[in-house]
Image 1 (cartoon, rainbow, N blue to C red):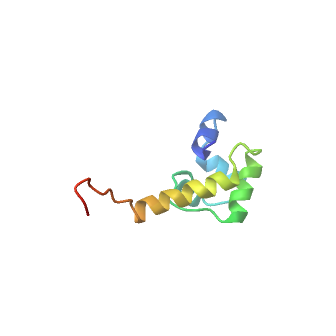
Image 2 (image 1 turned 135 degrees about the vertical axis):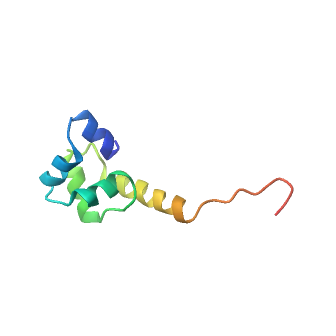
Length: 82
């Protein structure tokens, strides 16, 4: 489950969730919006705080995929050639 979905389903604000993890709300916002990849330690902390509903591996992968898509977009090749 995505972090934003977890927060919404559990009626939590990002600010409150960040406070519970003793972390900066701006940093957590970047993670929730896939603008920043969390450290392994932070990803595990999020997974524990959400009782496994937000998977650390998936969270890290989604953040990294978003980063790669933004900075290294896949260029489509037309049928006419290169």
